[in-house]
Each structure stands twice: as structure tokens, then as C-alpha cells.
Amino acid sequence: MSDRRFGSNLRGKRRGSKSCQPLLIVLSGPSGVGKDAVLARMRKSQRPFHYVVTATTRPKRAREKDGLNYHFLSQKTFQQMINEHRFLEWANVYGNYYGVPKDEVSQALARGLDTIVKVDVQGAATIKKILPQAVFIFLAPPSLEALEDRLKRRRSESSQDLALRLARAEEEIRSLLIFDYVIISDHNKLDEVVSQIDVIVAAEKCRVEPRTVKL
Image (cartoon, rainbow, N blue to C red; front, side):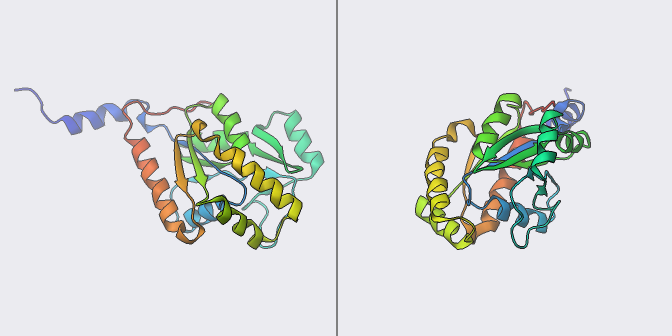
């Protein structure tokens, strides 16, 4: 009689295949959409991810912590890291530099950890070109009006900067086709946003052909 224990046989095959490869999750969206708030809620709930800390040259805001929210670097140090090719991607955004430390990503993946990278849409497009097997998630605002209200409440931009960010957000929303998933990010429903990310990760873990990211 043939062995009909399909589930156990499948699990055995997948353990020996590349199915155990960790995911690289790229979380992106317009400025002010709530990327930091979503990641903070995920950390608080102790979800088993490695959260890559972005490097930046922008000034530290109130309540932000160096090494937790960002690696706050001088222009000189950031430029040196560019010269040494130590960023997975980097960009000048609104006059400040942002970059994803390459070593931190590769080391986390090497340890078998599902890894989350937070970048702007320009950065997501760059990573898509070099690591298309990553999982790309776009956080979208409920509306541009809701995004404007959120940016105003943050009180960290001048009226000119606010107008620039809103105009750029309109352009970024038109970039949805480079992403695999889109989630409406309502600041008052962070737990729902996090739950949707959980669902996406669970679905990716069930792929017949798992994603394999190689740096």
C-alpha cells in the first residue's frame, strides 16, 4: 500500500529544501504613514523578527533613541560608509541621508531570522532591483487628507516641507506595482495593521517555491 501521509512527507521534503530560508521584508510607504508606529507595536508584542535600524544624518527628534529608532550619523561618517559600500541602499530624502546597513541585514539572515527593513519608496525600488525575492509591503494612508492631518500633528515640518511631502506621497502611491502587498495604515488601528503583516508572513511561509534572498 502506498504511503498516503502527504502532510508528513511534504514537511520532511521542505525541511531539507530551501523552505527554511528566512524572509527579508521591506516595509515602505509615504512619509508620515506610520511605519515607525507599526514597527514599534511589533517590537512591543515581541514578534520574532530582526528589525534593521536605518542610518540617517537627520537630527534626532524628541523621544527618539540612537540605535533604536535610527543610527544618527554625521555627514562625514555616512559618506565614509557610502565609499566603503556598506549600505544595501541609501538615498538623500528631503535634504537628509538615509541608508540600510548591509552587514546588519546579511548577519540577521545568516542567523535564520526573518528580517524587516524600513525604507522610503525610492529605497524599496532600489532593493527590488537587487533583491527581487524580498517581500515588499506598502503602507498606504486611508486618504491624502488623513496623511496631511497626521503630518500636521507631528509638527516637525514647515508648511513648505509639508506641501512637498504630500506631493511626493501622491507620486509614491502610484508606485504600488513594485510591491507585493498593500495595507491601509490607520494610526488608530495599529493592531489590525500588524495582524495583516502576520497574515502576509504566514502566507509566504506556505509558498510551494520559497523565496531565497542572497546578498
